[in-house]
Image 1 (cartoon, rainbow, N blue to C red):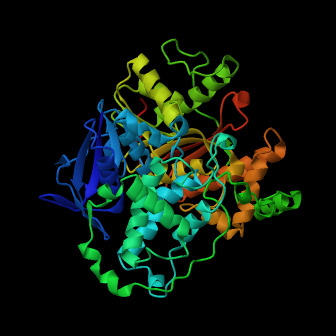
Image 2: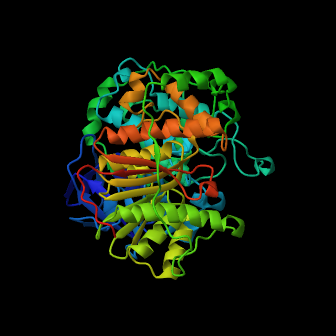
Image 3: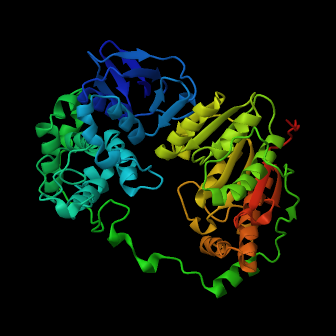
Length: 538
């Protein structure tokens, strides 16, 4: 049993004004038989257009004036468990929880091994399309911001979905299936994905009037199957359409479909592999990138945080294979010592990309008067973390399953141990935004790539040196030459850029090595202390 927190802009007798994400949660909740194990709580906030009017007659919805933690640390919608210690954020993840709380006859919607939409939008092309891109296209049309409608050009996302459904399905044991068509979005089986996609498609079809468009026959056949034969239309009817009457006069009879690549929306589609798009690091490129940094004072290594050689008997032991245990203890001891040294009583600490919570659990044990948040997007890893917390009787810990993007909470200290590639930079940026102290041990330098939040290089010094984004990524590939002199130079170069970024924001920053150095090949540790802070060593 749990509580689902949804944002709306207004609540009247029998209806709410809500964004597409909230409307989707309400429609899926209704389709699942309005499960009694789920309590719907709406929060009235000031929201930008567009808004949908949703009929909630017969749906038990209660207004909430203040969202409690840990749900308050995340952007809505959020599913919070009854123990008030765990929550799940992100549209697809929340909908998965609602399905789990419904009758067992609905659990088939989660698919084989309950893996439907289990991957987060940060790593899955498919999840990103379902919960972000198609909904964004839907919103654009709703606010009359899609200028191509007047020219008769269908939304790009419809073209991508039509292309996806024209290709062979990619499901478990596909060779044993008699029906290998895209009857539904992921193949022959009706899944949660179909409910997620059907609502924005329903809105698009009803606003631009392309129900009979011959350019999207697969989408129209699928939509009819989901809406009529699977009885989803009854729930979609909760959406009230009076506000969209203006579109009837703008219906275009002669549509055109944007040209898109002939590939499915699955990340592992073989057609996505294009060797020419890969970066193959040449020695001459490494030397060019290094030469551009010759006139920059790279950050010097300083002595790392002090720690006890022996693992204290009362410290929680990390659950790793015995051959890794000693090295893992060394890694955790280094980061824990550094984090404790920059933490004050009553602080909130976030263990970003926490996995099963090895570091965060140690911090919670050592800092009983502080609050620790374990944040990760992997459901199974956090399940193990919850089991460990229960066995250790630790109750100053919140567990949040969410992408970094969905975490909006205030905190004083951020930590991460071996957050892969871009994730380490996202952690540092989140800490800088919150003016929080941070302890980061980066990993997978070769995984650094352009993303929607960060551009490379990050520091003004590196940009002034004329280092291009490709040149910076080359340094990351160089840093992955673990154990070599050139690899060490690459690590120092990349981490100096990170240090300079924080230093330019007024932070006191140090770059150190884990002790002993051989506890991992990715052994750099960056410690940032926010501006003008009086340290209180705990």
